[in-house]
Length: 623
Image 1 (tube, one colour):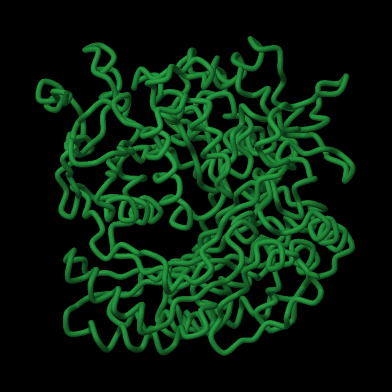
Image 2 (spheres, rainbow, N blue to C red):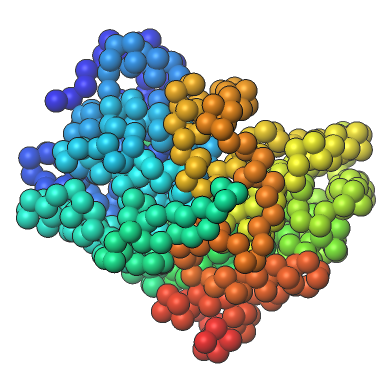
């Protein structure tokens, strides 16, 4: 039975978030399919509809005749209040059916501060929060995405977790579910059937052992049918991977409101703080002809007037020049713009940006990440001051008036000299702009400083989060130093970064904290106006835990990490070696150049990088 919304929509801020019916949305007859799935994005519509992964999985499932996928997002506070008051359960956009009517509720975990939204959405949907409390006819609650590489804080609430790229295995998950239904298998038998699919992790089938200090001492299978370790799945050939050329066009303006071409997946630059650079390896490129065909179809099927070239580092695409040239030539007369969401710190990237922004120069962003070369070597950010100044010189001479510089505070080994280096570098950029002839009253350099959060499966996973008072002192120092005409400084909220670190590094004990936080009203924690450090402190106090023990703990190489039973493909031995090299200030080369760095991923996953014109040595160092 569909939910009736008409009496609610006139009373909320943006009713278009909840009505569905967008161009290219798919509405199937429920009686014509055997498996019904809802993609659950634990944030609001404008954020979720900007997520390429949603569009890909929506396409993968809905191209099947025997399954459907609909969508649901976290409601904004006004809609949530009305839904609770009027006893309206959380519903999917396409059919407006309650989530509890679906077979599978599939969450994507993009950000640790969305964990409270997962619980809040389950509660709104009237689906039992705890996996062990769900009955045979309750939906399966599964999750994937980058935070699935340490889902342990959510383990009590998830029936299954998928590691890796969903388009590689979701057909297998649907087929296994369908076969289980046809055989009338129990919920436990169904889960075991899913657990036989590589990449699927069943949290309830693993026991966590703790030592006398309450720290994780081991994670072992409860059932011999599940593997001791679960490894991620990857698409071997991105050219052959399904990609949506009829994406849903949102009803309202969203964060990224444009067509998206995924030019390649993965990154091998090896920045030691970057989780994405590990979990999305290896690099796999799409060829130019495939991308041009996709661009033609997407523009024809959507009417978008901008195409974004998406990847972790788009300017590293081996055919970026011919691709940009062909896109500009083909779409110039139709006024379709091209954008690069990620810009390399060199003049080459500026030259590319110039080629695609002749009409309107919207500003360029560069990410030196650290203020001194010493610290850039520690984090393996192989960018020099000369690289940055050459890039901004090229930008200013090409007509740009504004640049933005991204840095991180709290990086391992960071000193106040490194912090002062940010100020020095920013002022050199200002001077470069003036020397290039940019009028002083129009020149703008924005310095953005986020807080380093150590993430699982990276060389810095053993490092603690810097203490909050030290981070604030560094932010205050930069606020005082970065004053003057043309300089703008902004810093990320320390409290939110602290909580992000807690859940990024946490274990199953945090499930009780999450449940208590939901009871206290915590949700939409990624939105500053709704984030409440006080309520989170109370949730920790009420459950007898302290967040500091998770955020500030320095792991030893011999310690059992809460995510050790989940494999991203890069070997732990390589991560240890990289951590040691970081502390020694040594850098590691990019294997795109053709020499294997020995990360272990290719032989483990039996997949190799796919980069036209580059033959990476047969990974002898990995073997």
